[in-house]
Amino acid sequence: MRPAFTLVWLFAALAAVLLAGCGPDEFSQAERQAIAGLSLDKLPKLPPSPTNAHADDPAAAALGATLFFDRGLSANGEVACATCHVIDRQFQDGLALARGIGTTNRRTMPLAGVAWSPWFFWDGRKDSLWSQALAPMENPVEHGSTRTFYARYVAGRYGERYARIFGPLPDLTGAPAAAGPLGSAGERAAWQAMPQPQRDGVDRLFANLGKAIEAFERSLVHAPTRFDRFAAALEGGKTPAPGAALTEEEKLGLKLFIGKANCVTCHNGPRFTDDHFHNTGVPPVAGLPQDLGRLTAVRQVADDPFNCLGRFSDAADEAACGELRFMVKDGEVLVRAYKTPSLRGVAGRAPYMHSGQFEDLDAVLDHYSRAPAPPSGASELHPLTLSERERKALIAFLGTLSQDD
Image 1 (tube, rainbow, N blue to C red):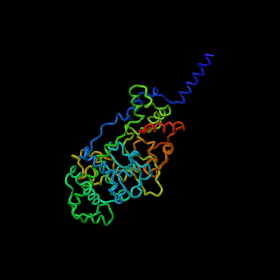
Image 2: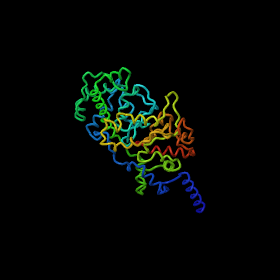
Image 3: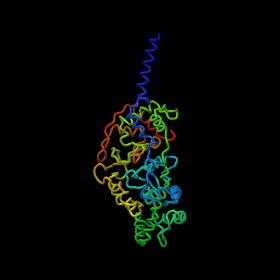
Image 4: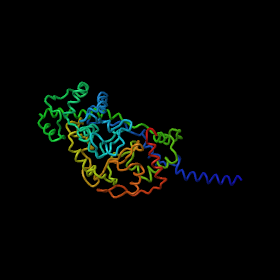
């Protein structure tokens, strides 16, 4: 009976190995190195913000936190940064299209780890975190107000705090209640009627408002997840503890992520993003205006008065503005190209893509498997053949990137 029992046991063991797909000892040295490179332990220290002299000022960060949650910074008194960047939803809102005073054309991006990025928004139309914070303020469907409104509001409610950090408030004597270069025709006319020195002072206060918000947002970081604990154990040659172990299905998903599925080509590094822009053939949303992604954004960021080379930047010299100076400015590669989002916490962040085109991760994998022709430009996708088991494994692995996994 013993030989038969041994044979049965061997077949059972072989079947278990085949079904498991891979175990921790079956990662090659190259795979181990790739996995280690994704660990949060490998995240470099917080980079400086050369255009914001107050980026690491605790007082500025404290003011920025207050501003971030203040609904008074909107035309209707109901919209704050935190309206879309919800603290208990990974600093995003779970909607296909963000909603402020009205509805936008894009999804809200999460904010954890955002200070490591060189470009902001899905198309990169801003080159600093502080200038990004300003754009929603003047967007009619987000905060929806004007520069003089914000200047008056900040001066009236936070004047002393502002002055201690940034210096004297501008002279707002006679400044219109609502005036700015991007408002209605009447608001634009009122802005042009203001003396240039007064406009300059309002612009400076407006820029500083963004700089305070950036100082706060630089504190928003990713927390380690079960994947990070597994990666640390794997790199150290140790058996993962119960709270760090991956299931066999999750390990197969990880192997696919860094191998056959090619996810790591764009979703690489400790933040699982290359911070670049890619056309992946994502379809447009019916009813929304044409969206050419990065192609339009390069013109916007180059002309932005609040960019790295602008007069409100604290950069010491042009050398600090390499990303802006040497960015790719034209070509088909920019058409409908969007920023690679971080995959940390991705399992709890449906729907997906820049305008919420896909309702779940299975729909995302279906798109990547089909690799359809793009609406315009050239897609970087190639058809990806995954079995149903492999798709489930890949999705299972992505679940290990969630903080509360």
